[in-house]
Amino acid sequence: MSFDGFPPFISAQLHHLLNHFPDKIKVEQVLSGGKSYPGGLDRFTLLIPYCLDHIKWDVIYNAEFPLAPPDIIFGPEDEEFNPLHATGGEGEGDLKSRTRSVLSDWNNKDPTRLLALIQELRDQYMSYQRKRVGEVDDDRLKFEISTILSREGIEMHISSGAEKPEEVKFSVPLVDMNINKMVHACPWRHPQKIYLQVIYPVGRKYASTPSAPRLKLMSTMELRVLFSVDDVKLPPWLDGMCLAEYLPQLEESLEKQVREAVSLIDIRRRFIEALAPLFGRPLEADPIFCRKATFLASSGSFVFLVHVLISTQFPKQQPALMLQSSQHISPQGVPKQSPLLTDYPWSPRWEASQMAERIYDFLVDESLNFKRFCNESQSQHQ
Image (spheres, rainbow, N blue to C red):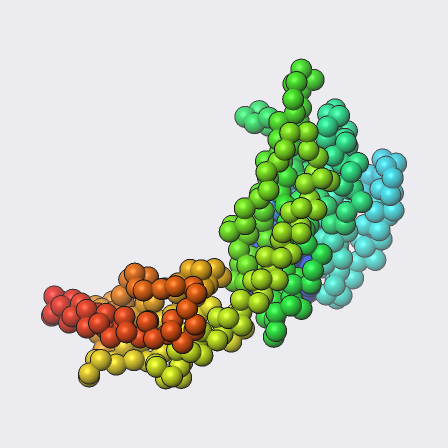
């Protein structure tokens, strides 16, 4: 994001927060609130990752009084969250004491101060939500919590409203693997994680059999270029099962699938290398995940690009091909392109060299169709 318009001390603190917070924070609604400091941006909304969702907190500096720490305004649904008022809960006093310390030691010239404040407040918010969930009058929920609290990184959130029933959401980190280190020359700045989102409806005393929780696998966005949790089939939830019984089977399956996804990088790389003897050295290629490559090709005097798009399911799923003319441009200045092409002979059991040969043979004929399409569309615009 651009930091233009912020006073230097706010810009430095915000820049440090966005670059050093463990998860990706977003900034919205950047405004100016000063009358004698016109145009000076000093307030904004942070979207802070929590429990596989975001909490929105307004951060309000006063550019006219730069020595003062910012005010933080929490969401309307968290009006009972008071991070400076100790209530005597276990560990809660220490958290609130640390927050007071961050505020009392505030130094507007220290770029780390906003990060420290947001981290402390988020820790308190996590403690606040855990306390609220623990007060829910639901024996099944209390049992589930007691069996999984020893796991690291679990977050929970209770929500309710006039239009929806009360429910408790858990975010459970899965797979104790450093996925970043498994990928050679890994470009990811943040650790890649897989989570199980578990949503329990708060039970009613007259319910004979507790309903199964809603389960959904989720992951950090960057991981999808290597491994998509959307392709994972969750194990069934059996009657009478608890989360502590469900997780080991799921994690064992996920670990195998993640290792397989990493091993497929080399298989995709060998496939791209097998294309080179037929198409020549690629103009561009994804060197890390080997998900795409672009080659320059010709049919007579007709010159075009061949984009090869390779999914994480390769070789079970064949690559999609797209042709792009180097000689035909639309009225909008965009090079003419073919639709994605996947209707060609393919078998995941073929050697990489045979896969490449079949694609080459297919494109010998398809390039003529594409050339005809480009010429016809060009004549329509003349």
